[in-house]
Amino acid sequence: GAGVSQSPSNKVTEKGKDVELRCDPISGHTALYWYRQSLGQGLEFLIYFQGNSAPDKSGLPSDRFSAERTGGSVSTLTIQRTQQEDSAVYLCASSPRGLAGKETQYFGPGTRLLVL
Amino acid sequence: QKEVEQNSGPLSVPEGAIASLNCTYSDRGSQSFFWYRQYSGKSPELIMFIYSNGDKEDGRFTAQLNKASQYVSLLIRDSQPSDSATYLCAVPFRAGGTSYGKLTFGQGTILTVHP
Image 1: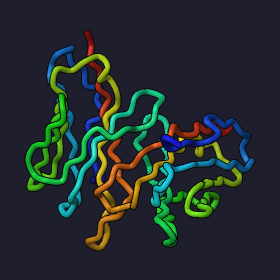
Image 2: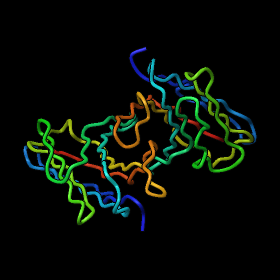
Image 3: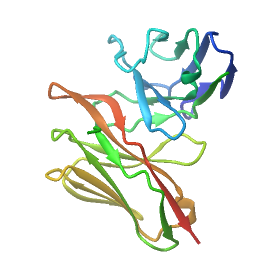
């Protein structure tokens, strides 16, 4: 596709339920990033996939959060047993090769998650 | 001290004026810096990337980098109402002297350009 796509665009769930958020990066991009943006806050790094390397999970806030990337393309971020503080916009980005500090990251439209 | 700091604003300037947005960073070894623009309800989009000391110009936008003072600024000349947005400064995360692809973002500065 022309850009990074994410689905769903909006998700409302009840506290305690699991949710899955999907990201389709730009075709051919080897690096994929997940960030979270809470209301009035800056972007917070969550997890980073680079090619076939082990993902950098250092930003995941708890073990309720996990992510995978299948076939080096589509990524799914899963939040188990959602809590109200998980409410935020979840943004996915991709870049061509993941060259540290030298590439533009292209962001998707985000998934707005609301946990009731 | 936060790794990347910005004045959250809001910064209000009249149409046609120069808007000046500032960002300071804590890691003296940082090499490259990104400015993203984010319209309300939209995702961030890159507007400037700078890695050399001095100025980099692109149309109405100028990024200024001063590594000795550890700040990077963004100037918007001839500001237009369509420039009203949140401007995010970002720096690649570094650890052990190595830079990584993940970005550390500032909180963003809200800019309002009024007619």
